Length: 430
Image (tube, rainbow, N blue to C red; front, side, top):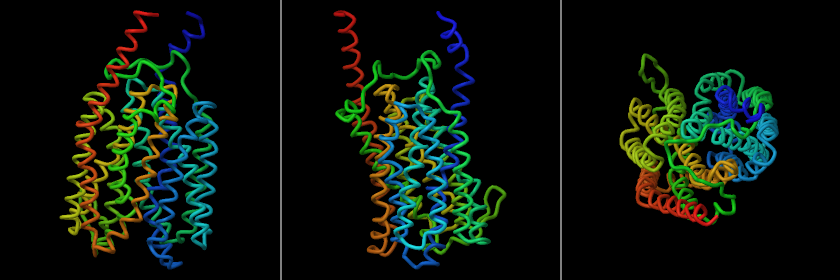
């Protein structure tokens, strides 16, 4: 063994945890682009009177560009490393919110959303891919912790953003938060890199691919498309809740009703947004850790089933302010884990060499799911309320839960048997 190899294998732990922490902080810095958006919808509408549906198109554009370009950004990461992609992403994040601060037309609002989506997607896809590569032995947990930065990253800034919007207007809030978040991402990007040979330990618990599948091979695999369909089903319900939580609370006439829980008293919507961000973050490493132990598909069944129950219960009991806070928290807790379970499963099945690209292709399902977000407003208007929207979302999650055991698990078992047989044939006939 060479001195270089010895040095590499002697210091994997500290380096990979440093990479993980840097990635998590980057995710925290881009979280408000999605999870803080709902706070700006009403102030923008009050000033320009464009209508909720038209303003929410910007959210859809953001999610589409954030997700559908991740495979391209992932290819750049797999080829050139994570540093440059995250650096550019941080710059674009700052530019997007600066543009939002000055947007006086829907066209400019939509353009800013597209730029922000490209930047956030580059940061998100890179940090998730880097975690998947550095932690093959704890892939669910590492992906979950990284995704938690995005899910819970906005929790501490909900109240400051609300306060700044009220005190200085949404324009100044967009500008200064955008610049600050972008600068932090740019600084941390300089620390990121991919692992070298010998820097990561192998997995000894879960079945993982014996070879690395190229993106074209992945696209030809039925397992990928089953996971894609499941991702869309679960993601749509969660995105509807993310984008529409404030309008739903206002329509239920409970947004400003004080709620006392856990020793705190806050307006129902503020309380729900804050606790939702925390639970949406905690669920990602929690269910990722669980999946490292009981398997990905078993964990999906539990989580997606819980999400179906939570969405139905929110529709039935959500007009009570306390229940609105509690049940919206349950919905977010049972939804956020898709961002750790699906990339972990994808890398288990298809290998780590092209992990950023392959997981990025699967992540585009979030963009597909986002197309349903504006339809929630249309469906609510047509049916005279949110009840039908909730029921449809609950059914979608129930279908995904059943698919995890009835479809995905058997397909993976057959895939693993085929891989084992191929490896045995190669050994016997080299």
